[in-house]
Amino acid sequence: MKIQTVGVVGCGLMGSGIVEVCARAGYNVVVREINDDLLQRGLDRIHRSMSKGVSRGKLTQEEMDAALARITGTVSLEAFSQADIVIEAVIENAETKKEVFAALDDICPPHAILASNTSSIPIITMAAVTGRPNQVLGLHFFNPVPVMPLLEIVRTILTDEATMNVARQFGESLGKTMVVSKDMPGFIVNRLLVPYLLDAVRLLQDGLATREDIDTAIKLGLNHPMGPLTLLDFVGLDTALFIADAMYEEFRDPRYAAPPLLRQMVTAGYLGRKSGRGFYEY
Ligand code: 3HC
Image (tube, rainbow, N blue to C red; front, side, top):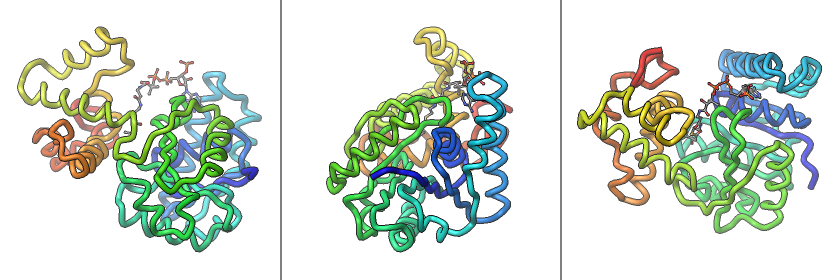
């Protein structure tokens, strides 16, 4: 199967990044948001990101214009009737995702592959509401999508080999390096990342060191691009808490139990960069 048209459901931080890499790889992309305002904000984010890419010499102005011309924004899922693959990147809520997958299953052509960018909800949950569970898998991108080279491909116990092959070719065409994971919450990256991030919050909560010293220690001692508390602000404290809770729910392992400080900060509206305040002020 040759993919020509990619559908992306959701044009938030992850959705807009996915739209950008697909359009830049030459695909026609249809992206759907729930209203015109959110759609416009997502399209503006894509524009800003590509402009930054142009100013840094990653693509030419002509390539940017051509990529933008391949993107169609919509507020209706009906526009996915021509899609060969659809990547869902809506909020991390199992019920919402199930509704999206059931609707996609009705609208998309029979050959279309349905993928989720979820980081914590088992893919089989969405696959089970479709009539094509063998053509459903996880495609987990990393933020910022145009910059981060990794793509986790998540195979459920029902995903067939033909679907895996198309997904591998697709990921390669986007310039991503792929790893394959079984369908367990957290997959590879978050399974390792989440306990580490939660431990950093525990250190701060215990008063072991200041936020700056925890981050500096990891940046300079391990050569990470950012320390764990800065990374939490970047990922979003609510997103990190949601992922941790989902993993704790599944595994019942104290390593994934969110420390009270993280939960309190989310309750207080300190969500990280996006809300102007997390462990740091922005
Ligand atoms: N297209 C192509 N390249 C782009 C681009 C675009 N739209 N926008 C930026 N870039 C390039 C820049 O040109 C630059 O490349 P260069 O070094 O060759 O010049 C590079 O990307 C970095 O851009 P900036 O210089 O603007 O930014 P920083 O140097 O401050 O780096 C960062 C930003 C890449 C985000 C870096 O801080 C980093 O690596 N942070 C960690 C990110 C991370 O860990 N992400 C994973 C989060 S976990 C996740 O997503 C999973 C989820 O489930 C929780």
